[in-house]
Length: 252
Ligand SMILES: O=C(O)CCC(=O)C(=O)O
Ligand SMILES: [Fe+2]
Image 1 (tube, protein in one colour):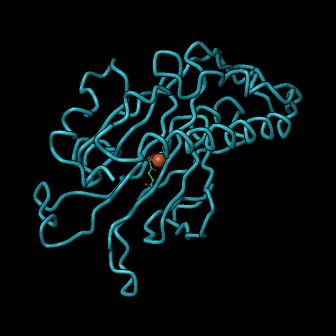
Image 2 (image 1 turned 30 degrees about the horizontal axis):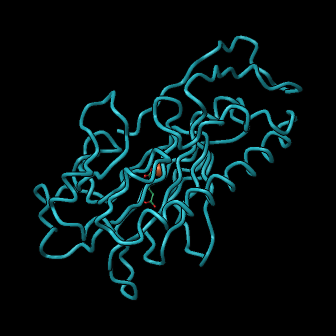
């Protein structure tokens, strides 16, 4: 995992700091602030492209394993997109047709597979940025939806619709959580909700924070997709004043 890489590898494969650039690459702890203010103690490696030659060759087996994982996430995402289209009364391929370029590269589509590692909170990093840090600040994802696999360390919390209470998202071996993002929420006129979520350091005595691993697949529509809440037909409470909107997002 990225935290074990040498600093040479981290530098060579670092994500660009230029906002317009591709989101691909290694992101070091403290670079991101999802709640807009608090730095995050997290190592991440973003995969946004299909070319094998941009994966760190210095890490044995990484490119091959990621290639398989990418195919699996793309297959699962395609299946869910078709199911959701049918669920909202649209032709089966309606959403899928707007996600043709997932993981091809950010100039066509912002989809990103992220490998995440949150180190244990120990004496060494307790003082990271003067003790002010979180694992992942409260936010909603901005994509179509996110597929999330997490280990048993826990810490992921979510707010359900209409509630102010943070609820724990438990770990089920082999399970993948699906969280709707703002884009699909707007597209479906809030028939699907983007739920606020965050990652805290678990306080449970029986599972001292040993470090959390997660894998998140952020699925975005193709960049040239014109998204309108009026795309969906047969809606009982359609807002006829809703205007066409094109939503942009870059996870930076
Ligand atoms: O690491 C996790 O489990 C969640 C991360 C997350 O919500 C995000 O990166 O948007
Ligand atoms: Fe998220």
